[in-house]
Image (cartoon, rainbow, N blue to C red):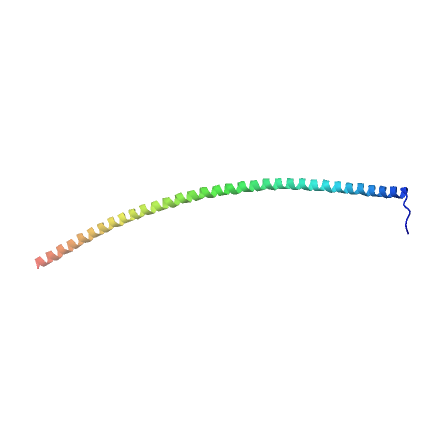
Length: 125
């Protein structure tokens, strides 16, 4: 079963091998082009997402700043309420003290009148 090897058979095998090598190189070139296109697509996608993430980060930063401003305003309002609370407490105490003193004065005056009536009634009898 030994075949005779001649030059035409070797030439034919070389031509087939060359054709297969060319086909493999074409496929390899196609794979290279697809790989480059995939890398480029991924770069573009990353840029788009990076831009979107940057925009989102800026939005969050703006919201954080607004929250900080609101927090400062609330702190100021808290301080004003505390100051007003102390002032109101002082005003209410002063008002109550003044009214209590006035009430005591009126009671003392009425008691004095009652005493005078009682003293006048005991002196007449």
